[in-house]
Image 1 (tube, rainbow, N blue to C red):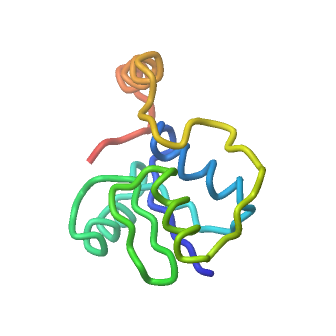
Image 2 (image 1 turned 45 degrees about the vertical axis):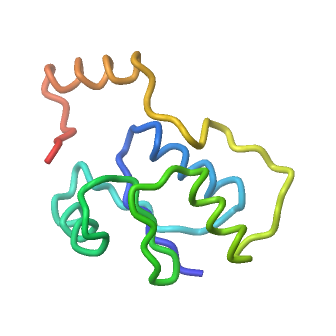
Image 3 (image 1 turned 90 degrees about the horizontal axis):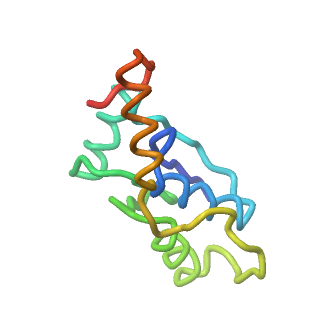
Length: 116
């Protein structure tokens, strides 16, 4: 299975997608849409929309999805088997208010993180 995940470096939704990949020990390409404008443009072109995360599984684009939605897709299409493994972070939630505050502070201090 070929998986390309268009993710932000730090984002509750993106961390949820990564947690599902780890939960099922899936190999995937983690593509940074914040620090690479070409990757962001590729995601928008392929998904026909600007929101993330987006996950492409064997050519099928799952646009603007949570980790929970990715897991449901994988299970319902029998691409993975159920597991008793737990995700290490919430798979269906945004960043906390504290995380957003930290990101805003970093942006003010000249962090390399860019938002397109």
